[in-house]
Length: 121
Image (cartoon, rainbow, N blue to C red):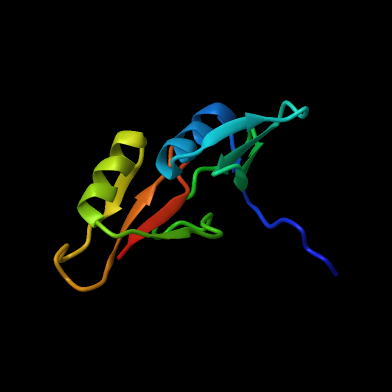
């Protein structure tokens, strides 16, 4: 088996809002597809994330809801800078770290469709 591309796809009721958020967060761009129900975020010209229109998408309820299926961990050099960028891009902080000055840790956020992700250091 030859896998020539690997991409994580998010279901969302708002293609443009969701793809736009992740493009801002990752420093990429949104590209359209011939399929009206699909968007791709490219970073440095490479496809990184896909978004599929799902009008009946049920927002995950983190941390106790049954809908969470996966989350992304994004490792950053400067958690304070990354936090400001994520929030300015449209993320919502769900669980702050206990100590931002610790050698390692994470904070939990959600994207506009409610998918959780972590900023880790």
